[in-house]
Image (cartoon, rainbow, N blue to C red):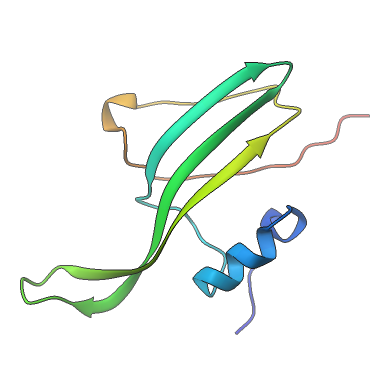
Length: 102
């Protein structure tokens, strides 16, 4: 199984995170536990994430597996886009971009 290109391969702990989930996690439907910004472009975000399996329980709900709380330490943040906070704590999509400006 090949892993799609992801910035997670470049981040400290990223390879271990991919190994835990067995693939690059999307964090889709994860729970946003914390988001904080401390100034000077620094902050952190903590997300409770898991893998959604193809198996169902007795009530027909899909079974989750490989739960983990993932903390991203942020630095060099210049732009933040957040919306629909009435939906918190759910996450519908997550994007991490490394942009270098010369």
